Length: 217
Length: 217
Image (tube, rainbow over all chains, first blue to last red):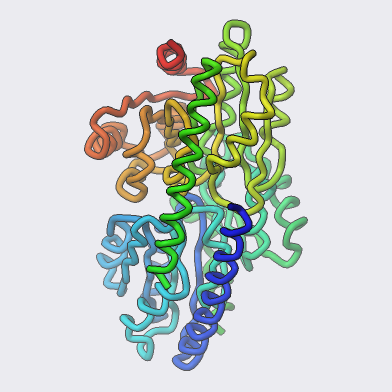
């Protein structure tokens, strides 16, 4: 049975890559930058996006695509900030795919947008396998999850352009070795940038904001 | 494309259900109890299992099946406790399935075992969809992940016999409303038992041990 699954998966992934390319062409045509934020459930993706909206909403025209199995909790929070938010409910699927993103992009006023942020489904496995057409992939790992995650979920860390280590405000309460974590990430992905932050207290966020401004150039 | 995926998935899930039944028959024949522990990455499954081994290894004959995308970090920790541990590396798959468990069960001396604990791949989505043949399903949610997870990942909470809320030692440092969380779980799954614990400090573990002893009767 495992070989059968693999073939189906390769077909699906191939079709997805094609659609991701079409998405990228659409975005480039409208001078939009698309970033894809991935993490475990509860690592702080929505909090990071809220901080980013607070910082940039008067300077950059933003939109957010929220991926969840169910609920509109996160999109509701974004909409309260007067930033357009599209909620994708995957209805059980553990990741977003390029088709879902295409549908969401067509619902946004792309010609009036500079930056589109995707909040992927909370999951350290499947989202990394499905290209969406994003210009940059960001992996958010929170301190309470532990420093061994690059060994256990290598693909996610290998694919990321930027790795954010969130919830550093609670470092004193957890056994998290920042050096060991950074070494493990660098071993998998020498070009990935690693930034420690706290989306709650704001610590380290200026470096994230600078990184994002560079990505928009 | 989505309809195509769904059909394939239904075939796979159907075949998996059949295999899960065969696993259960094998376990019942040998008077083994199989429990399946599911959570996000880093929620504390391995720490819970280590505490459970410390408590029961002189009273109950235990074995552990460790599911990970990659690495043998967790199985190595279990083996150090002189408890048989089988590591399943899924090579990219985001969950264990009944075929993988069958292979692992055949590597264990089932006639000399009372309790088999499965540590599923860290993921709040896919593991809940794949029956393994387990007698009990346990969902472990850690405080830093947030109290909104039952709304976002309902299937996992709907399927669980027991929901453990781990890392309660750090409750003062997070905005986690235990009452709101418990209400959300009960709304999805009125018969699920909910126990707050700290696998690190040991708080609340006596109730977990009692629950497990009842499951073994």
